[in-house]
Length: 352
Ligand code: ADP
Ligand code: MG
Image (cartoon, rainbow, N blue to C red):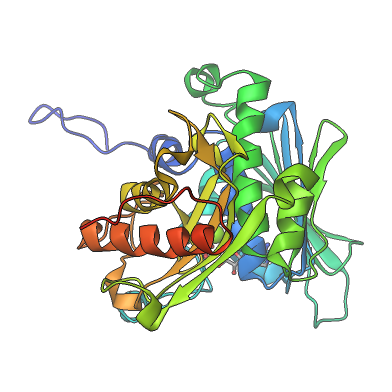
């Protein structure tokens, strides 16, 4: 409604609201990639191909062989707050098994880009459907020949929000963010064949054979893969604390980088960052690493469902635990045991 004589407070039009909201979910190409890859995983894909051009600013394409969508599904999927994943708050309280549940990603991405979705259900006969959505409006829906599964293309992200488009960094920086996102999901889902292609060049592709070591080899290369040792601690092996298990791979101390980027940490299979987890890892390596050097780490942590809240902001990956000190001790102990077992730590005085 327009302002009246009585008040200047008025309701914003839908388009303005949608574009403002979009900025909170989609900050840069990598955030679109994250949402689309999560959708593919939620759709049970066994193969996910991510293609980006110009760091994702010109094009992001995610193709999967998941369960696919019918024409009716497609029309519903781009509407606001539409999801097939939860029905209400009860589902949230009892814990969500899917990565998504807000039902806002496709709608918001589509309100700040030119979005094309092709999809065909795995179980249906019939052809596929192509839906074109631009700046928040359905432009066309038509039958199309396509493989079973879903391909989503996001072109010209932020074309209709120039101020935000200006804030995008160089192609190299935007691609680094995309690479990090795809890497995190590829490592967490070694049973899914994940590939990443940038400007026509394949950056990596995992086999989907289900082996974490093989996924690390595909993503980081032979030098790093051959320097990884297993961590596997649960139950009695861990000091008391909220973590039920700590498992994955960590590198020899000599195989390190001057960036935290290679600390891939997960809680209940969600990629997260956490000071407690990082400090636990770094504590285990002690003085073995030079200042500001970080190991390669792919570590999965299990906590009881009610000890973490997944109902956080979609962009926030930082998690906090009730008892950070206990978490730090648990991770330190799990990683230290693995390093000691492989003779990779100089002896150090026992800590109190
Ligand atoms: P959410 O993931 O939170 O449900 P989205 O906006 O990301 O919300 O997606 C809306 C709906 O569209 C999903 O709930 C799902 O039913 C469907 N969908 C989206 N992407 C895919 C995909 N790649 N394969 C199959 N269905 C999909
Ligand atoms: Mg989603």
